[in-house]
Length: 491
Image (cartoon, rainbow, N blue to C red; front, side):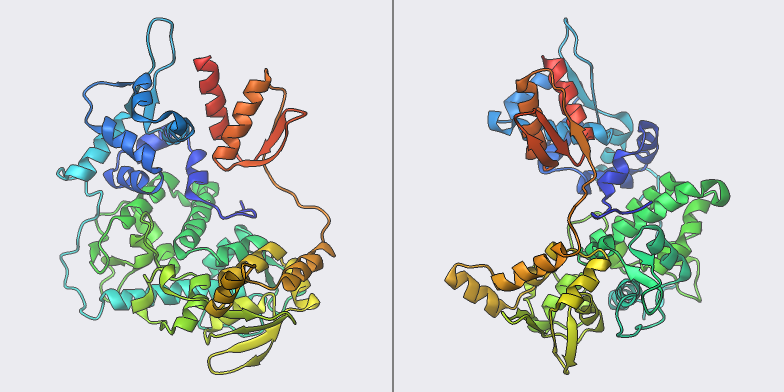
């Protein structure tokens, strides 16, 4: 079980689930609503809302009237996603009848309940009737969630830094989860015996919402692997996570109405910072912003990247900035042609991130300074961090003055000499890059190859192609298989 070199996404996890699991998941209105909100592109949502109250199935050919001819690729992609998530059923083609499409029964009924209300399904939580401590407000929950989540990030970063640990750190179970997901790995050449991996560095630079899902999905896979010993049902666990995303921030909910599996989840969710349980009233739980934004486009906490950029803008690290969007903050990193680096920040976490690939030698009240050296970059590379990641990070968080000068001169933000040298330092240690995926070849006709290759490029999974040999390599195969199957039926 590993996140690999890319972030482990919810869509990747759901694609592997069988249809019976989806039927069970969609029995809960909160799950159907969460999948509709988070997992579907705009066109797919349009199809769902059109089908939701249709008394009879829709002819598949009628979609051609809804979608312009140049949007055929987007239409096929939307249908592919809807089918992979078992949201729609499409009848097989026949000589005497046209194909028809309709929503699956459980998804349709649950989404209707979610939108209309009513019934006693308790899918959106049961508010607690017990007295609530007035000190437990939204600001308190934000501070609590930030502390819990930054403890996890500190563990990943401090595993290779010499800046010391901040706070008590995450629980042992969380540390084991980070190891199992290969966000960190055991290394004998580090001060604490743990080293960050390339996946761990990618994890650090994600938005907090994506970070949370990465960790939660690793947890679900671990629960699947130990189901016989723990009795934890990953389907009920995932359904509970979707339910948490629909709850109201700052409101107390009743734990006594939860199933046994969900009650057993609470200690781990406390360790992740997704919920808060008062010591004196354990029958209450409060969802934090990390939980309530799981299925929304709103930012939960500021990511490490956004936090570093916020330093220049003077945004404080208090609870009021938890939901601050990244567009409100500015870059704080200055890189000179002599490889000197300056960052206007006082956050230990942000400084620790820079220390992963920079030789920091000066620290002031609100600024650190250092140098990109061959040794510091190669040290980062030994942990799996790539030169492209370093360059992208520095460019994305460059000081606004660097951005203005580069825009006025019509050149790149970072000095070309620095970019080239960082990549050359990586080439000294690497001669080959591997990419996981699937090779497609032996097509029946050139038109079939061109159509498949164009579709793979359109949906962003094409890695390499050779038109002469009529073969290409893609990072994912499920949507391409569905597209090929639809082409053969149409043909």
